[in-house]
Image (cartoon, rainbow, N blue to C red):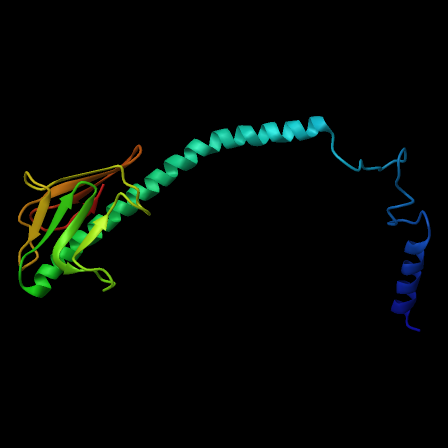
Length: 183
């Protein structure tokens, strides 16, 4: 028998003796040092629930405002990407391409949906999930429409204001360069 196996057997026998170190049952019990209560009191439960309620009351408004900021940012990125898409399509097709804003949605006349499942013009409704935009205000030289010529240059500059709750993002189309910027 090796030294390691003898040591292992001694440790095993020592742990099996009542009251041995590490037994956990005989060494601890009601009235003995190191005894742990088997449950929690009602006062402890009420205190924990009160702390959780306080933390929830603090965190909930911050969470709602962060969701609104996220949705406004994602809607602004979508509008910026579709402005760039309209600009690129005008150059590729060699004919003007417009983007028309109506209420909380916009469409690109003459461009089919990319999934090829829907019919009609490419339309994005910002009032529905995942954006849930509460207000869209587009202003391009007096109207809510911008048109790109066959070189991709816009007929006018302008901006699109996107609001979700208190969160607000502005998509700016620069008239000289056609560059899109989110502020």
